Length: 389
Ligand code: PMP
Ligand code: GLU
Figure 1: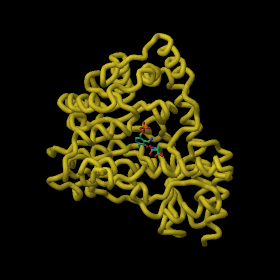
Figure 2: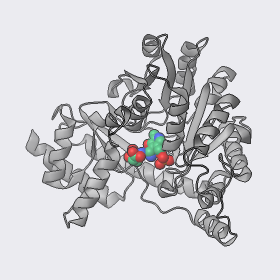
Figure 3: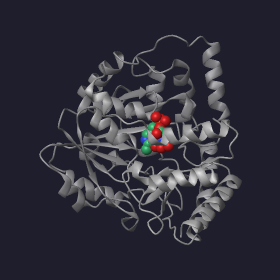
Figure 4: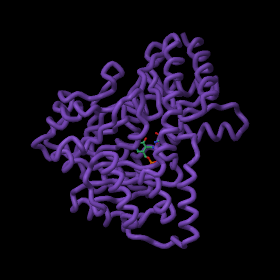
């Protein structure tokens, strides 16, 4: 009955573990969850008010498929203001979360057998979306010693005549690694003269620590602007995960046109109230609130990194961005799935196995939760690790 395609698709491991932790909690178990990639903060007041105003103004009808003109202008304004990128509003499509932006892109670009280069550790969704469209994921391995970043040599070696796309995620989920301008320039040099498209997932752009600077991939050069599709959204920066707002931008009008065709036959426009609410999330109105959240994340990041590195048998490279620690457990276990299952059943602590991100010997710990819970979670992990040694 079912299509062959759907039978090979796996559920999102991050969502599966988060759901399991919620279920165990609802049963009355003492569970601390560090699995969700979701800020614990509430959505900024100004965004909620924009949604209320939109409801009162009756903005409850279908809109144009890519989004209302004011929204597309707000996205273009954001990309100019923050990233110095010259996208016109017509080069933008808004989507039901950045996951949907990526899904549309992969469906529109990847044919059977096309290769998509994905640096590991990667966000769980990338290879699943690629393989669902018949594409082949070509994984480039990196580890903590390499700062979890690919080198130009690795990229060169991974390219074949079938390479269609390079997926970049900066800052990275799950490692927090950020590609510097120089590193991006070196990767760009390898791509020069090829037809390879870059999808740059910049979802964690606003969550950058230790004075590190974020560089948008499309801003490297005119060549990179032309070949890159920028993907971003407000789920993380504006604590809007449930609202479902993401977007993509490309100067390739043929691509935009087919993406709009695809979306017109699937979800149509995104929620009209979310569209109105997103505008103050893009035009600079929430900059101060975002900075306050960033500072809170940075303080947690610093403390959690220090606490983990005091545990005998565990180590973690301090991330430069996002809100995850990718903790090395290789001295304790090479089976991250088993490690995480045992940790959950013995200590009631939910974290995500590294294997889900294509990297065995690690787990992902989200510090997007309050510091007391983080301290208690790490205490429990320490107790668990002591017993494993
Ligand atoms: N990209 C990355 C790297 C992510 O971690 C996520 C998950 N939150 C997304 C995209 C998708 O975000 P959204 O909730 O907007 O679909
Ligand atoms: N992206 C988040 C995470 O990595 C949310 C869950 C998901 O969409 O996979 O946990």
